[in-house]
Structures are given as C-alpha cells and as structure tokens.
Image (cartoon, rainbow, N blue to C red; front, side, top):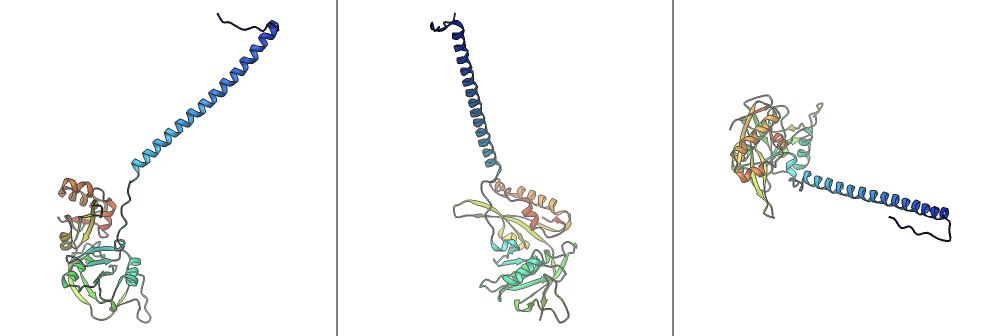
Length: 283
C-alpha cells in the first residue's frame, strides 16, 4: 500500500497533474546526479591511470645519470704504468683538436708509421716523461692505427717533440684534415706489437659509493691499474661479438659483489674501447 496526499481543494485530474510534474523534476535530478557521478568516476579512473604510468616511468627510467666523464674521455686515452696520461684522436677531427688545444711544450707526440694513425700525446703535466711511458704509449698508438684492421702483427712508431709538429705544408703541397708535417729527427720504436688490454677498475666517490670503470690500453699498464682485464689482438671476431665476449670473460673472473657493478657498464662502451676492425681474445 502506498499513501498519497490529496489536495482537497483540487480535483483528481489536478492532483494527478501535480504528481506527474514532480516525478518529471525528480527524474531530471536523478539524470543530472548520474551524469555527475559518471564524470567523477571517470576522473578517479584517469587519476589512477596517471599514477600507474608515473610509477612505470619511475621503474623504467634510470634513477641516476652516469657521472659526466673527464675531459680526456672524449678521446682515446690510457694511463701508463707510471701514471702518465696518454690521449689519441679517434678521427681526423679529434687529431686537429688535440693539435690545436691539447699539446703543451713539455709533452711528447707519437705517430704510427702508417696512413690513418691517430695523433697520440703523452701529457707531461709537470713531470719528466720516461722511456717506459714512451714505449707504452707507442704500443697504444700502434694498436689504434689502421694496422689493426689490416691484421698486421706490428708496426713502427716514432716520437717527436711538440715543436716538430706543424700544420704548414711545403710549398705547393696540401695537408688534409687530421694530417701534420713532422720536421727534424724522428725517434723510432720498431715493430710495436698490436695488443690491447681492456679491463675494469673500481673507484669510490666522496659519498663512499663504489663504481666500476672501464679502462684500456697497453697490457702492462692495464695490468697495473685494473682488477680484471682481457687482452685482445687483431683477429676475425666482429666488434660487437668481441665486446660481448670480453664482458663475459671479465664477469667469469669477477667476485659476486663486483659483477653487479661491472654489469652496469654499457656493452657499447666496451665496443668503443676496441680498435677499429675485428679482433680475437688472447687471454
């Protein structure tokens, strides 16, 4: 049973009309409320989806950028057994930059006796450059020359003083980009063996956080500074595969705590340390 109030001042038709109009208003209010509810629910769903995407981004994107490298890391570089910095150009443009901006009067300049070799410099930095440093830098200059891609067993390398290096060509001649004139006596080191060691050393920052750093160069020098390393020579393994094999062999040697840090080094960074051309692992 439903009780309905009747206005006795109105007839039955008028009372019915009154309730009909009220029902129409109620339906309109319900429709408006339902629309508002649907809109609110949609906004809630969108907010949830946005939060989920945000969380996904946080989990996928690296939480911390790798620290920016030292100035010399844009070139090929190594530290000798005695701690002398050696830099070499990766291409003709970098050879020009090294010549124009990075050679100082007390440095020593090296070059492999083959077309397409990098301009290589031992930085004195206030110290007297030793014969050992010159020999190690000569092996570095040889390995990163075109002799590697040619599959040669060794190549001659000479060293000179900075004042002997010039961009001034003889009359009627032209020096291409990345090429230089050498005047005066060249000091030769014969048949420098083509070998490179690629290794890992560990550094600790000011906050006490430990990180793995890739180093490469003359075998003796890398052996001095690296905890783990692999030696390579010219061969038939493509660079990408060789880089993966170098990483695998280093990880085999590494302690469990060190492996976690080594795995953070990008494989393309290892590949960039390999001389241009194919290679093989010696040990």
